[in-house]
Amino acid sequence: MLVLPLIASCNAILGVAPVHVGSTDDAGADTLDMTDGGMCVGGQRFTYCFSDAEPPSLSVPTSIDTASCPATRTDGDGQTVCVFAARSVTVHSTTAIGKLPLAIVALGDLQILGTVDVSSVDNSDLSFQGAGANPRSCANPTMSSGDTGAAGASNQGVAGDGGASGTTTGGVASIALLEPSGITGGCQGGIGGGNPVGSGAGNGGFGGGAVDFVAGTSITMSASSAVFAAGGGATGGAMGAGGGGGGAGGLIGFDAPSITLAGKLAANGGGGGAGGDGLLMGEAGREGSTTMSPIPAAGGGSPIAGGDGASTTASAGPGASGGLGSAGGGGGGSVGWIIVRGSMTSTASTSPQVTKD
Image (cartoon, rainbow, N blue to C red; front, side, top):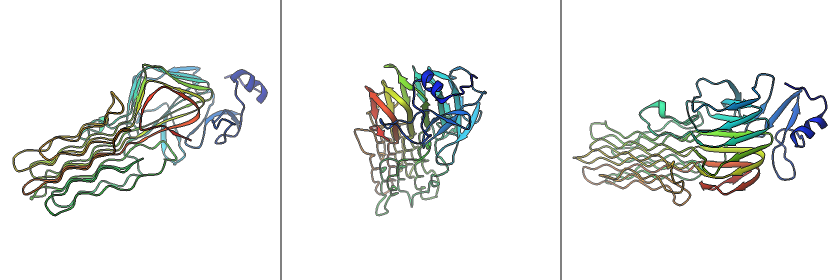
């Protein structure tokens, strides 16, 4: 690594004005800093300081399991984060799973040319849990009473309540959450109520994962690129059992002095699972959309419908109520977060709307 003896030399080469990490320039953007002889990028949510170990350039792998990472660091919330870092970084397309959230970091420029997907799509298989989904800050999903539907998971918005069964009220969604201080994924939806013999409850959809893009100079998305952090759909209840709640959307973060967004960005909630009746099992809810970002994820349609997941165009839907011999549907999951820290130009389709730090 070239050691720059003078901060002025660093400015001339990289074209940025160093300030302390976590502070901002006049445009509100984090900029490069020299800390203890190393060069650091990022801000309050996540900071990465470069050493001699990082390569000059990196093309991010097409498949990532955050259980095996080239480096780990701690974010602003104290969570361990899987990190891919280099002087310059190009992301073509990648899917990331695993318990740890993901940070992709460039000392200079970071380009996103394909699809980055940290969504959760199947709550029956941990291999489909988006990177950093269901973080430690989430409460454990609880089973709804009787044979009612479960509530979806809340995040930036309030999730849908679970459907009642007869006179028994379904699961009630928690309040909306504050903007996360780290790279924090979405939470899992609730578990539906069991049938009269206490079995068959629908499982809650996993929350969406979390990915943070950090650069010392610029982040650029191409028009054909996309980033998704969708919550997973819940499973339906067995005959006479309540549907699970949809998972909440996760987090997509951008942190650089100059940020150009294009293509699609979506952290939508998953659909709630349908409740079962005396003859049929409930259908599963769909995962949050990873095609056209504003379209909400449908809840399980029959026999007792689950609520739709939330998107930028619709709030999370409640599960339908059951009657005699039929169980309530699960509520849909909330949207997550798209957070930008830096000077932004955007033509992207986004769901939810961008939160500007």
